[in-house]
Length: 250
Image (cartoon, rainbow, N blue to C red; front, side, top):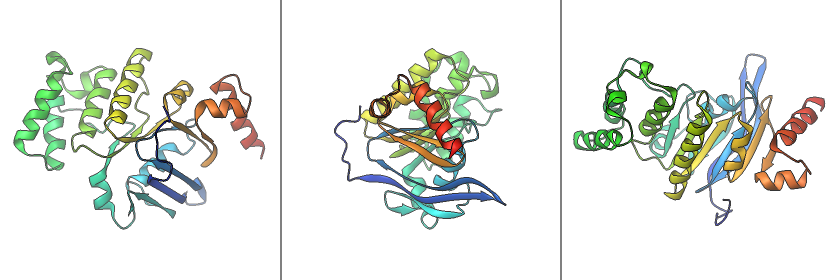
């Protein structure tokens, strides 16, 4: 990966982004861009500020200071336009647990202004991915791997150009994680741009670029192999631990 990208074309621009809760600074004036067609992994320990950042980037959480632009539209002033471009799969999968998979597709398809015929097509498409016995169960009763598949499917209903996935592989087995990343590659091959938050270190190698955050600060950024080589680290775990240790000392 990380080949053939137009380095000049930033589809997401984050500038001095800050979130404070009272006297606590959860995200501290961070800056980064995401290029069109890129897969970026946003890596950090639990509580590092990943979800807070993504919620500000989607307009779900008010920005204290700084700005986020998606294809030139400012999240603060052009949120409606941003929502037309952006797909978001939250940490909790954003599904209604008491509804079935089909019912979730009907609901989210409706609020995405899909026609009845398009929703019917989407349900038919989902039936080719998920077994019938799973589709007829409430979301709260189906295995995590299937919840993950349905959540991603629902996220993609409006065919977003940019996709934010917050801890999408949390709580699933390694095989399901690999399968999910294949779906991410498929989306990249369709021209989508993706930001994926995770605390699973091995997932950094699936990305074009990794951004490491700790205590609300970006402490490392770059292509995974280049970072390993430049810092002479023998593994992502070593690299990550050393970067966190250096930041904690500073």
